[in-house]
Image 1 (cartoon, protein in one colour):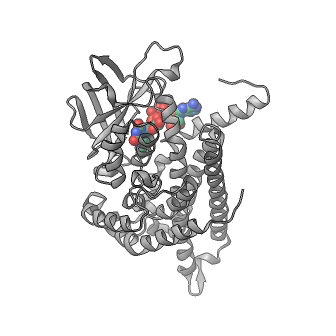
Image 2 (image 1 turned 120 degrees about the vertical axis):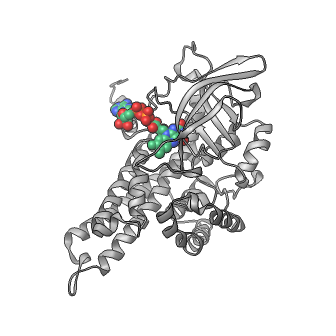
Image 3 (image 1 turned 90 degrees about the horizontal axis):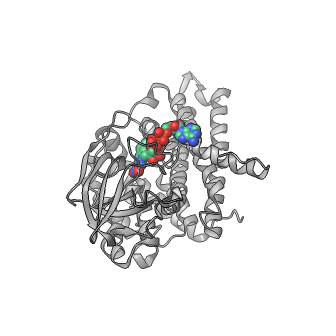
Length: 401
Ligand SMILES: Cc1cc2nc3c(=O)[nH]c(=O)nc-3n(C[C@H](O)[C@H](O)[C@H](O)COP(=O)(O)OP(=O)(O)OC[C@H]3O[C@@H](n4cnc5c(N)ncnc54)[C@H](O)[C@@H]3O)c2cc1C
């Protein structure tokens, strides 16, 4: 691996960092005080300015209207954007749209690309992804209750989903539904179907309060119902029965995006911790940063972030060279490692700031609440730990199911 940063990455980082400093970070006090929804008008102005940088929807190839960065290049940009809770939204590279764009790019029909992908890339619409169900374990989505049955020229969907991020205000949902309940291969039972908002039978029951926060618009997580909801057969994404394969494909690069965003969060948290340690006087002339125990928190955080970044860049490099399937082990390793690093670094930073760390004067408390989910979504830690261990043990001749 070549560890040098390409000229393009250096250039992209500089543009994004300057934009974040000037346009995004000044919005944080209002975000932390009043919440995301109150910022929507000003955020749409910022999105206009972000478009002018040529890096709006930067992960999407130029032929679809995006910024045309490779996965590895975008990973660096994602880290810069992660330094603020709204960076990704301003550049239209926020989950779940980012994954839905990738899915439609790779597997959408020409009509789906024209109708849904192009406006998604432009940022004129948003989308959501509905896979998880309250009644079934989301960490093993082979078992799910939502079905899609063919009837004439339509799919008829029935089911109950929750934690559909950003469903409020989304123009369409991608629904994972069982289309072949009797298929021998359990991984061949489900398909992905596109459901436009407003389709009769598709209903948002309400936003779920997460860590006490009900959110709203893009920053929400909804409970959703499909009741005899009919959409044309042409709304199938990819092959019938390919739902799990597509979900894995969607989540591979998605985990790189999330992990690099978390590294951005860690860098900002470390920066806040160091600024505080360097200026907080415990007694006249005695600074917090003079205490070895605080120095250990700083140095350990630096080492963990550095290791995490190298692991993620290596995984992105491998995906680019060999594809997401070949990089399965690396992707699982970064998912649980970086999510845990994130929480340790945030916790140390809050501890170093004392009561100030719990206020909304810094984004630390916001992240501490909102990023706890990192160890659960896109596969809980345990699933990834187990997957990695089983692969390793297989090399030692032990098959564990
Ligand atoms: C903020 C947030 C946003 C989300 N956004 C979306 C979205 O947009 N769309 C969507 O479809 N879903 C979304 N999800 C849902 C997410 O994907 C699921 O929560 C996740 O897959 C885990 O499923 P579950 O919650 O049903 O937990 P379960 O599957 O019930 O697991 C519960 C716990 O059991 C443990 N566990 C599970 N499997 C194993 C194992 N094999 N070995 C040992 N322990 C295990 C883990 O600790 C796990 O946390 C979101 C979740 C959150 C928190």
